[in-house]
Image (cartoon, rainbow, N blue to C red; front, side, top):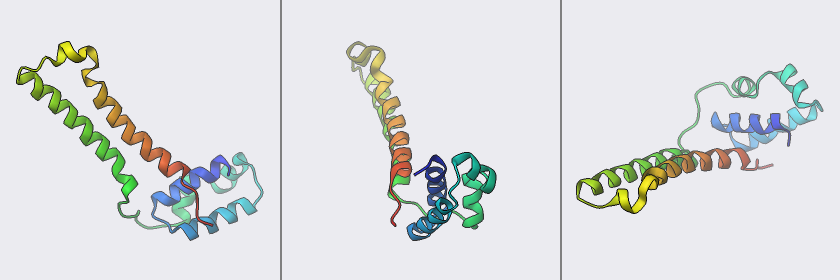
Length: 126
């Protein structure tokens, strides 16, 4: 699958297009036999082409859409725990040192990265 096809797949999924319809669109695009640069010149940006193929509002919420918010909530919970722990007299500064907020950053970025990877690499049902 070319880079253009992967980006088009992600854009179509983002618009809530059915997997069978995505497979049909990809077959049409791949049937043109053009390179990525030629596809971009001929069809435009993958997001714009997806909007032309599937006009209308986007899709509803899926489980993978919740990975970023869950990561952010977990990160905020960690920050609250660290601040609450310090207020209660826990020696987090001595125990964790400069790493006391690192888990919050990792949880937030982990949710974002997991969602992006799952949306990008999920195969299309053909």
